[in-house]
Amino acid sequence: MAYDNGKMDRFDLLKGNGQQHPGDLYGNNSLTQFQQSDIPNYWSYAQNFVLGDNMFSSLMGPSFPNHLYTVAAQSGGAINNPRTDRNIGTLHNSAKGWGCDVPNQRVQVQSSDGSTQVQEACFDFQTLADELDAKGYSWRYYAPPRGQGGYIWSSFDAIKHIRFGKDWQYVVPTEQFMSDAASGNLPTVSWIVTPGKVSEHAPASVCVGENWTVQMLNALMQGPAWSSTAVFLTWDDFGGFYDHVAPQQIDGYGLGFRAPLLVISPFAKKRYIDHTQYEYSSMLRFAEDALGLSTLTNRDKGANDMMNAFDFTQSPRAPLVLKQRTCTVAHAYSNPNYDD
Image 1 (tube, one colour):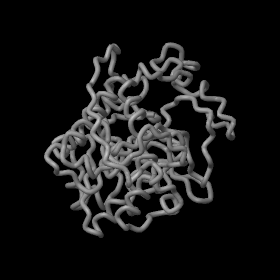
Image 2 (cartoon, one colour):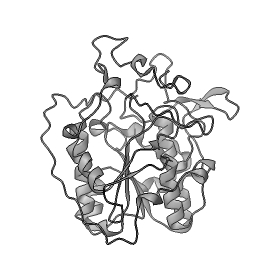
Image 3 (cartoon, rainbow, N blue to C red):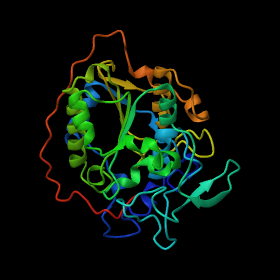
Image 4 (cartoon, helix red, strand yellow):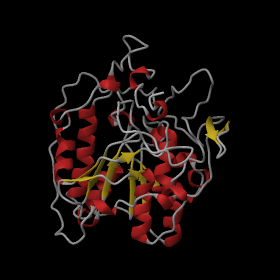
């Protein structure tokens, strides 16, 4: 609806933004924006490192399929969030998970010819983790564990051979990232997924979420791995906020709307706005090129590799350790029963 064949003119009609449901928590979020004073630490990262202003979600849809693109450059054709009962729509308990853990959980899947069907939300396609395993590279997926808010975004729960295989040992609680970063025990490739209460999922507090991000990045920057690390910080979809830039439709699944991107590294360019078109598969392409791995799908094969954000001839950048700020927002929106 918001895309409107590229016109980008119906964001205010989206369900949940207050127009059709007076008094609901979303208000008119689709027509709001954040200023520098609202996100001072994100702004500091952008001023000191790289801001990507042409980053798009991989799929014209919500969280579940887009998270799958971050591990596999595809969603197995999934185009929506899973559901366990036709009567509850997209309202889920975020602690129970999406994927192989929940019996009879189904998801809408679109074939290459555009037809759709509903199938089990448990897939078995190859991921970047499988490529890393094959070449002997280490990896961990830092994510909320089962029973905690945000487990729905733990994507490997939806990959059968990882969820029920030996590699599940590498899916660890989000908080472990801080101790691994401090001790120099980070793997070659890390994914870090936010717990639900700090996810910034509208109308949650962006201040609370920003503080969590600062905490994670401070742990990295004050640890021994900073000198050889590249961080790609992004969000899993557009969140309902208006954007005027129509995403290029490169196949039957996307691209979806723009998402924020910050590239933070000792070798990231300073105060640089990167206009290169990226999507979540670009992060996989970067890892594949850097580590000599093959591409997984046509998406990462065709994606720009994010190298434009770096200058490997420059002197390594110093850490930027920031202070968490006091949040004055009255609610953190920790209700576990939500998603896009």
